Length: 191
Image (cartoon, rainbow, N blue to C red):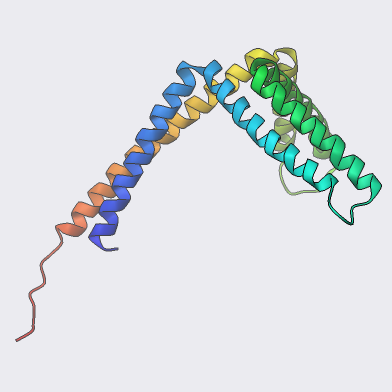
């Protein structure tokens, strides 16, 4: 690999690492603000989705059933967006509740699958995965507001950890780039 590519690589790795560490610290320091930002971004997506579904109601060739379905889905999306913009805390709690219910259902299916599947994966790993989903689901449903904050903090911790990994990789790549640059000088044989 040419030295200039290695130099660019280590600089980008360190930059990515520093940005991840800063983002992680922000997530950990202000989890409530993070949740509000995420919910507002989700609200923007829901509004755009609702408008798109609303447009599909008036498309030619759509049957009455499709039009009704698109209309109901558009209304729900626009209402969800309105809730996200006006009551982000309530929207975060509702989304955490939905996530908790999903984890409970998933965990139950995984538990059943652990004892009925014929996969080569060790059964205890499948049961462990199911139990983790069930416990997390229960915690989210029992404490939706605190769970939303915990999610932001966990994401912050993960971002800091990955940032540190990227910075270390950047310095290792820098060391490799120096070794390439300090290699033996081959004299020119051209006359």
